Amino acid sequence: MTDPDPSAPTPRVVDLAAVVEPDEPEPASPAADDPNLTPAQREEAARRAEQDRRDRRLVRRLKEGDERAFQELVQTYQNRIFGLMLRMISNRQEAEDLAQEVFIIVHRAIGTYRGEGRFYTWLYRIASNTCKNRIKYLKSRNFHRSVEIEDSPQAQLPAAEGGAIVTFQSQVPGPEATVEGKRMEVIVQRELAALDPEHRLLIVLRDVQGLSYQDIIRITGLQEGTLKSRLHRARVALKERLAPYMR
Amino acid sequence: MSAMAEQSPNEADALMSAYLDEELAPEEAAKVEKLLAESPEARAELSGLQNMLKLVKGLPEVEAPPDFYEKVARKIRRRRIVSMEFLGLLILPFQVLSVVLILMVAATYMLLHLDNDPSVKLEKDPTVQAPPAPPSP
Image 1 (cartoon, each protein chain N blue to C red):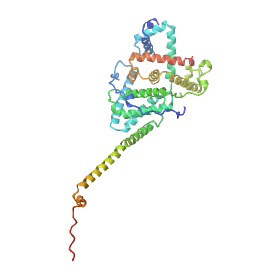
Image 2: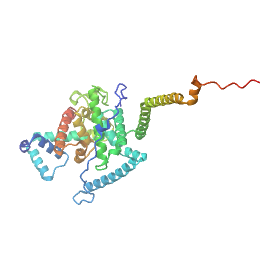
Image 3: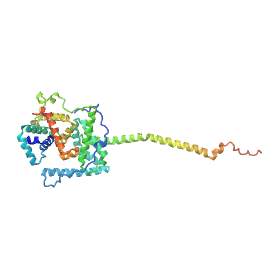
Image 4: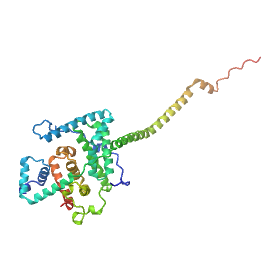
């Protein structure tokens, strides 16, 4: 991990209106007792329904001024939001600052959350807007964040030039596989960071964090067809970037 | 990929994406598989995408630092204090102005009051004669 760059611009005070959008009513999720669902889908639906109930209770308490409820909400979602930021920004310190900023915004804007949509998607919308604004801000200042990658030049060469060769056999457990796995992570993260931010966001939400199409549609506001075609183009772009490291 | 070629690029992309995510209905998936069977290029493309997805999905989950919440809570408290200080600075000129105003009103009142006070007038009026001196013994 690299140390935070002292020359980095400090995060701005966020304009709430720029990142907080009103929550919209969402179509009902499939019920856990729907006979058309597979057992795994039923289990997922039940887990999701329970999570939503819990979130609603916590949000109600937070609106009443209960700081313990805020703590529970943060601890429930901190890994997911931090993970999203880290994969988007590629810098641990910056990702932590941004993830903290997201929860500070939630704390300030909780009064505007009407409870018509899921808290989970509202939170993710704030996170993705905050992240996109930050990337735009850094880009406008021509500021290039260091991607946390292994510094050895060998690791950064394509396979044909003696660099890291990522094979799926390297995912077999063992000391060599651990080293290979780490290299693989570094390379994938670096190439992911080189994608257009819109493409990167879709890959992180869908392929890294495993969100459903429906959730991504609610977070990004994209139409289903647009999401699918854009996701495909993002995947093709990443595949081409990773091609030199795969065999 | 003749049938896929008949579709718009966006539709074909969307179909491939949904196929990779196993989000297609069985009959749509069967169509894609038929098309893949006919096209080596499409198979190569699909294989490359599947390999890439294995790498991306293999990225380890990350955890926020253990003191994450404490840092958030500290920042919220700090911002509250800063905003209160800012508010204090913002109203300071008005506080000074109100004190000055009160002083001015008080001074004006006192001046007017002095002008209207009959006893003060008496003291000032030169026509007022001094009380006669007591007769000397």
